[in-house]
Length: 377
Image (tube, rainbow, N blue to C red; front, side):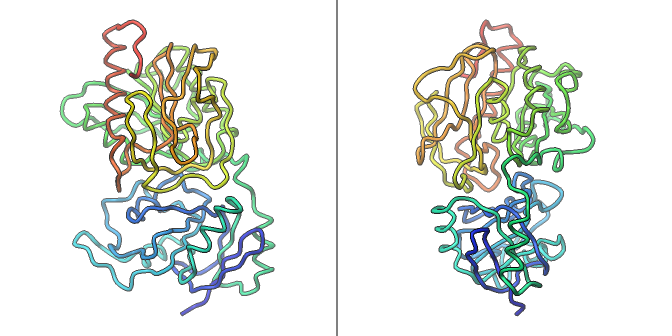
């Protein structure tokens, strides 16, 4: 087997075997805790410029198929696993993960202690990393790592967004039409909305409020996506225009952070982020705890103990992460808008948060019927 090395920006080095494409890659090292759903992870645009470390030890057991991709390609900068499957075994499989990684040029490494690497990232925080199966000198690879751009200040959404608008039709009778700001949208999102009778017009990340409102949509959706929300001023301005028009708005993940900024709240980088399928979140609106899917390295800065006065009225934290009290959702009390930090459309599960799409539909329905102060309750 061809050998490979992984070097973190603080100099910590791991040696293993090449996995996927051969070559050299650099990105931000992050770890994902899902035991399933690696195909959805690899094709999630939110992982752009990130080297994903899988904490589950066995990866690739079910191979890959033609149905589970969340976008048209793999977006990860690199892939790290402990024990790759020798051969896939699943009735839906159309190929092996290893071959898919090679075909899409994703450089990876296997055979390393991913538990030790994850503990290191938890203790030291997310950092830049390099993987190479062509460079054997750790110092040479470290020089490339330290020369790479940081995720802080990175404006990545335009690079993963659609270039041209497109429409995902409703399934059955069309009840509502929405505009979706594609900051890195996953295919599962409009599919979930379509099942509720929603036709989704997906627009590029740099679309303006006028673009989003041009077709007279019943609501506006803000998708997930990669990068630092502090660098996405164009999206913030677009959202402020939607809020000014009092059009129902729902955002997830990166969209939650963009809504927070549009309301005048700050954002900050988490020490090591939340990525995986097992994050417990308290829904303060319903009083229930949801097990949720996450993929974010930044968070909204808002007080947990009171509503905040903003240029668009009062806003309160609607969801809180139970592991570390991170803001996991916002609820506007005076304009029809709400958001969550997690992924209610998570195709690989869990599906505890799926009713949030119905909440968005209910909000649009209330607004359409002219209910005073229609909110996301």
